[in-house]
Amino acid sequence: MNRYEEGITQAPEKRLVKYPDLLTVSQNEIAPRERANVLVAVVPDSLPVIKTIPDFEQTFDSGRSRNAIIGLEVHGKHGLREAVVNGRFDSNGRVIESFEMQVEVENHTGMPIIIPENFGILRFFSKPPESVIKGDDLMREIMGGSIKIEGEYGTDWKIDEDFNAIFVKIEDKRSYIGDSEESYVLQEGRDFRKLARARYQDFPPKEGEVFSIGQTKKITIENPNLEMVLSEDICDVDGEVVERQINSVLIEPSTNWNVWTETVGYDPKEVTGPRFAKFTVVRNGMPKTA
Image (cartoon, rainbow, N blue to C red; front, side, top):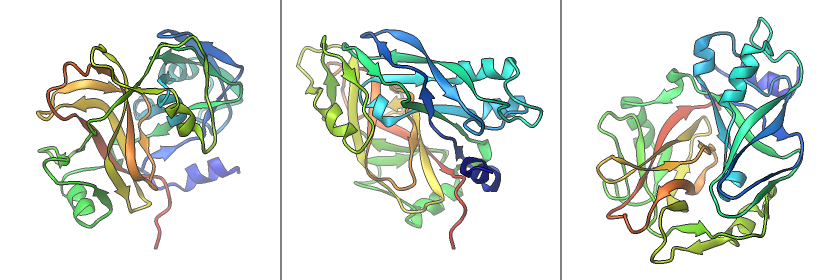
């Protein structure tokens, strides 16, 4: 039994469980503001167990931060559907043998982006409805200090009226990535954010709708058995959806920083008030600590 299988087997039921990165089969270059299909390698235990339609429906994918902060969005659910239909899973719902799968990649910027070979661009996760913490349970976690958010309640962050989600203000200052003929090569390691920042620019006054990079107020997750999932809905103060967060949504249990947002649909000329990122809180597949 490998470490991924062991972790999945021992994870408590009805909790969010994350799976290993899917790695690219070859180098790919994605043209500015274009989409392309990219092959990734799927190995046993890198996908959730899928035996039933509900299993498939509670399986989601998330692009990695190192892609999202430079404007690259990755989706793998269609490829997963084809893998299920084409019999890549055994009767127990596990991957039979290694295979290659297509994922859709979209470049939201005006510069070419190179994805190296053997590069982790997305991962799947299983999120049963029962893993989502809401109502009185959500209030207890917040009041007990498991989740801390910088700023003033009602102004910098708030909870929706059904106690299902937390809305955290995005700081006013945003950045974008200007057009360039120079390719950007995706990076791993500790410096990938520093390298991405070198391509960021402040908004010019006449810029129209662009891919936008921002940060929320600081969020701290104290409980290692909890994490947050970022919704694609970026809302105004009235809860109306005004932007879309690209597909990079998993917020780790160790979070103690301003969460980055990477959105499409932002036009600085149209902004009339604060924008809020929407989060759900979930129980993860880590074993409980004493």
